[in-house]
Amino acid sequence: MPALDKTFFSTNREHTYDALKGGILAVPAYTQMQRSHDAAFGFEQEANFWYLCGIDYPDWWLLLDGKRRRAWLVAPDMEKHQELFDGSLSYVEAQKISGIDDIISQREADSWLRQAARLHPLAYIVDYPSHASYFGFSLNPATRDLRDKLTRIFTKVDDFRPELAKLRAIKQSVEVDAMQAAVDLTMKAYDEVKAQFADYKAEYEIEADFTSYFRRHGAAGHAYDPIVAAGANACTLHYGRNNTKLKKGQLVLIDVGARHHGYAADITRTYAYGVVTKRQQQVHEAVEQAQREIIELIEPGLSIETYHEAVDSIMQQALIELKLIADKKDEAYKKYFPHAVSHGLGIDVHDALGRPRTLQPGMVLTVEPGIYIPEQNIGVRIEDDILVTAKGYKNMSAKLSTAL
Image 1 (cartoon, rainbow, N blue to C red):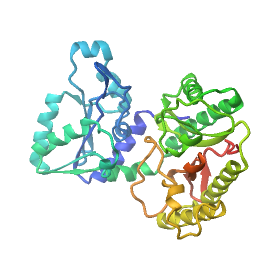
Image 2 (image 1 turned 120 degrees about the vertical axis):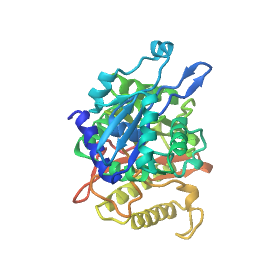
Image 3 (image 1 turned 180 degrees about the horizontal axis):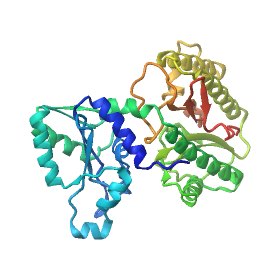
């Protein structure tokens, strides 16, 4: 596939200059987060920052001037011992990756911001997501720290995340190629795991083989924490302990995706471990059929509201046929299908689509219906990655069988 090189990042900045309409934008990279006493978690970059410059190191900033259509990278101040232990990115390498010639220090950046404030009372920043209060975890402090700095300098600070979400929602051909590479690698890992499925003894053995396959074939690793959920564990939507022994007659829900070339895949299959019951087969078949019907809905111009209404109808009918709800007005519907059927996919595994009213060519989204019956220890989800095209859709993961 073509490289995601400095031309790609430069093009993204050009589109961002247009959206800025003469304004200025400050974008922070993430900082590293504590894992234990004196050790950090593995680093993963903030998606908007990476989209605009390609730098995959912590604590950098990116400054954009929409009027002059010019960018500056701000290098972090590093202590010698930190550089020795963790390494650093040279200015020359940063220029090569990003296509940005101007790299300044934190001190120079403070001066740059104060000068910019004389001409621009408003500054934009890539802020926290608007619904971050629902996440239930601590947010990366780099965003807050830069926002607080801007608030002290500028009259007003606004969030530019919605505008970047609109730009990122429509994938360029090079992005589609990168995503297809991630999907292809994930499908091959599934095939390898499925071929030896009867030999596994525990959820963690399955996780380990996915992890090994991804790294052996050049992926950065998992795009998100893998889910390998046997039996009742599948009814916990984001189950991630993956430490339960497998028992014959269980369904095993596997939700994994590789990160490759900076982009995420996100695929779910539910497999039989040994001989399963007729009821388990019925639920799996219901989810398969529902997913086929939902994917067929996808086309450019389809109203998001219409899409969700159609999905609700399809899933309600599936639950009626399984005798889980009485009719389409039954409030128990969300008990058995409690999550959204789709989300955007890209650099982030839950990529924002910019709150569109309709589906548009170039968008990539998941289709992941599921039915979860805690009282029967059954959880089934099937998920594929779908590209909206000019004439309809392309199922990027269609080659991977959905069969038990």
